[in-house]
Image 1: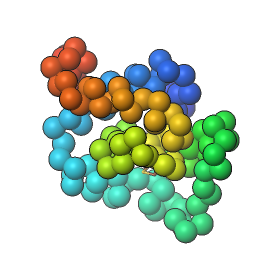
Image 2: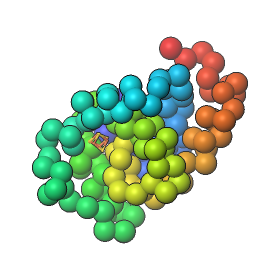
Image 3: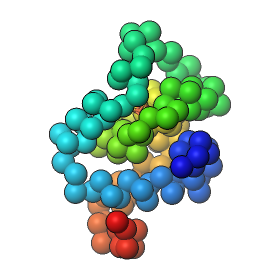
Length: 125
Ligand code: SF4
């Protein structure tokens, strides 16, 4: 997966990320949380008290998200966890995305979660 696939700024790319999240549908919250806190890059690379914070500018915050989350092995798990935990009130950088991008796709994530028999769940590994 290249950088553009992991950190897409376009809606089509964001929709593809949402489809990838459907594989976590059966994963309990506590398992997801353990994965993210154990393997998430920002949990062991950065001093969390000194991490740069979003400034509220979409472009700058997208770049910040890409910088902070570059190479994180659990970016999709992190995004799924943030949607479950914070929903549309999500703030900050999680899952390699700025909050404006997460809010833009949250309703679609929620729809997939509430409609588990939709086509996206079929044929996956
Ligand atoms: S995706 Fe980003 S915010 Fe989430 S665990 Fe990885 S580095 Fe941290």
